[in-house]
Image (cartoon, rainbow, N blue to C red; front, side, top):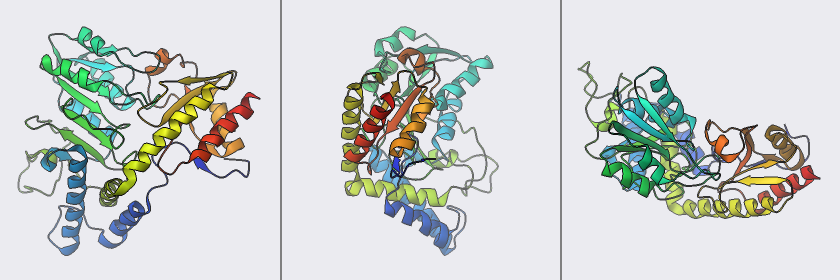
Length: 380
């Protein structure tokens, strides 16, 4: 907890966005208090309204992607959706490729498959900014390669990958590209022309709540359902439905989270996109000012694609720095390895990870000043 009178300055938007737009909170509350029913489970008025809420969320997600709504599923979170995409696509004996810049939401299910002897995996390295060379993906390719997994933008450094080049390499060889868009969707074009499958959570740059993710797959690509159960459709059969969304949405959906996702996407369409872009300018300015402080090392590019700045302070553990940031300036940052197990060896931050500040649409230049001032005070 902060021990000073400094105002709270939330700079952990890469983990989850806060504060939420007021209309997102209102939509969440309305669905929870006044609708309450389960989507797709009944013909009474409340159940129909619940189904309309889900349809609005699906349609809004499809507009953002520039995709057909019937290719958009809304599972219960991005980690779940990434697991579904991996386990529902990979076959025993496949060779897979991932990158050192990826998140544990994909690295752990991939390594789970490796440990059980089901697949072979090649990990493509990244440079000191977290950037992956597409040629390294080509060099790792084998005859048995089926799936390449790649984070569109790093949650540690904010750097974006050249997914168009990577996708071209994958498709020339007849493989599939799974794009983890957790740190990109809502900030940059979704690059569906490069991907075969894309996954993103609602609660980060889309300004929604936790509990819902967007899972898109290109036309003609089936993802074998790895979770079976009720969907509210063809309930007379013990077999899972074959339609894309129904096959991947087993279980009762989180209705308030669906309502919040639709509201968050509407907020973005009504001008929020500009405010998200402004958060990127704040990150660039923050990184530049931190680089000017002796004893501070900033990881990543000078202009990250996602509004993320990772840094370290000489002589201090990242956890100490994060604690002091809050005590001195009220800055709430994240420290450590950020659920990215492999990137730190390449960044040179393997000893304790980094301190990460990530700007959102409600942050201002005052927050940049607070971060830089607190770091300057720590350095002394």
